[in-house]
Length: 424
Image (cartoon, one colour):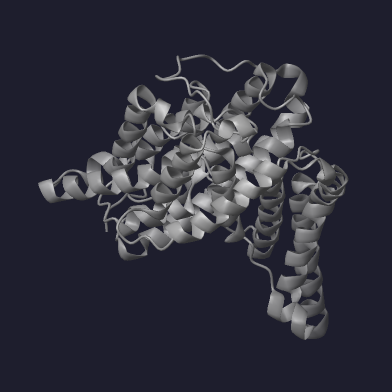
């Protein structure tokens, strides 16, 4: 069994073959077909213009490709982290503004530094003991928050998305009469085409759906009917810039950075572990934590949002036969190619199409104990899950996971106390 090195990619390519290159390149191409539209969608979800999702798909992935242990993990923008960014930063600045971008970039730097510090302190293994019930309840609440935000995009309603879920629903209901009829009809049409595109067996369904959506907008000139599109995307790469240190908001951003750092690592490590089951490489949680931290720190110098391992893209990477971490580096080359020469192809891509993609991706994150609730047989795991879920929806995501962790600790303490009392 091979021991991990500081830069595992060089260990992986010692006996590199032409067949490996072909598989890595093909895998990178397939991943990029999903990564590019997802990157733009998740940037919008985070409250930023689409181009920042493409930046995030490049620079952090380069660092993880060099220092990460998983050969098939696709690191970049993900829905869970994007909505956490939006929920945490939107109360501090108006989304889409220069000050909002400065907060997000600084937050990315903080997330990376927190992760690297955790790795140096060797506490990566300890974070694996965060109760699954807490993560499950938190992620389910995140998914509902994401879906609500994107429904607003589908029907053309602007509401207070930064509020906790229950309060956002109330505001959404009050703003519902302002829904844009043309956008609603168009979104319904896109929904039909989404299910049609899923039947594609020759080309990736995502690519088919994007092409169809864009073609409809162009052919029928739907922008004149107030159908919102991605618009002009600046071509080329961002310049290197040092994140602005926003000292007056440290008290708000550091707790947020900590929670994002933990969720980002847990999501990534779970996926990397499942991908690594059939490979005899050592998966060191502390090195994975360090690689993610380095990816975020490096990305912050190029206007990136915090990153994590993506379940859907990593699954595509594995299914496409990726052999080494070079597939991650090759994928960034495809994104760079698009940013340099093909940004005009996304000008007429409707935002409603991206919203639908996000909704169906978020739907898969909902994992609640339906059978236990139906049969009224709720155990300790289900109780913690449900309390974390409800708390996250009622009080906000940060407070929700805190409440879940506290309840989990209390329940473990009570169980141990009962066990020791019975023995006596």
